[in-house]
Each structure stands twice: as structure tokens, then as C-alpha cells.
Amino acid sequence: MSTVGILALQGDFEAHEKAFREAGAETVQVRCASELDQIDGLVIPGGESTTMLKMIANEDLLEPLRNFGREKPIFGTCAGAILLASEVTRPPQESLGLVDITVERNAYGRQVHSQVTQLETEQGPMEAVFIRAPIIRRTGPEVKVLASYDGDPVLVEQGRHLVSTFHPELTADRRVQRLFLAKL
Image: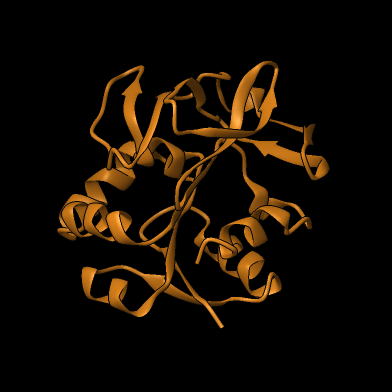
């Protein structure tokens, strides 16, 4: 059975743990670099990307996370999508640079503009929860768009990595988690 690490510095990492357990994976909360050795893939949850970056820096996790992502799969949701991007705008900030996308932070607006909507995907309709979500403004040539909303990519993959600007852990549908588990 695959073990999925959930970066447990900030954000709703417990919802990801529950979702991945329901999808058939073992989970481990990751808070330091040595714990990366115990896992087959990593989830970077939603939260506040600037705060998460500070916490990652405080734990000396930036380079270990980049190195992990060069070898193993990472799934980033919302703030995690921002951290995986090669370029971040509004405002610019550092990232792991593991997925060739440009992401605009909080592009759908403030918290009151958060919403639940239906996406059309290759696997059929999927409920999507957007909370102060970023927008993927550019995808590189190796990035595959798996779902879009209003013409903007919201679920993409590049090689071993998966990025979602919505929160699949907040619905009962486990197709996105199973998609990530197939990469392990």
C-alpha cells in the first residue's frame, strides 16, 4: 500500500488525510525533512501560501521539498498549487518551481467569492470547491489540462505532479485522490 505524506504545517491537512485514507492510502503528517523519507508521494494542502512559505523556510524544508519533487510525486491544492508553480504573480513570490505553470494568487476574489460548482472532466462531472482560489494563467508545453472552469485550467498534471486550484478533499468524490495515487 502506498504512503501519502500530507504537509502538516498549515491548512486543512486533516481533510486530505481523511480523503486519501478513503481512497485506499496510508497517510503520514509531514512536518520536517526527515519524514519525507517515509513517503511515496506528498500533498501540499490549501491554506495561505505566504504563511506556508515562511513555515517551510523556518523548518528548512524548501530544498528538501524541491529535491523530493525531482524524484517523487507531489499534489498541490490551492496554496499547494501556488507553491508548485514555476511562476507566481499578484504579488510575485518564491515557489518550488516544479510545475511549468504561472499562477495568479487569489484571482477569483475575496473569501465571499468562494463557490461550489460543477466541472466537466474526462471522467465526467465533478463537484469543485473554490476558496480564494488561484488561477492558472499559463501552462507550459508538458502540462496536461485535465479540467477547466470558465476557460481557465483548474486541474493539471505534469509528469509525476498534480495541481488543483480547487479543494477535492472537501467533497465525497475521491477520483482526484485516486488519480494522484496512480502516480505513486
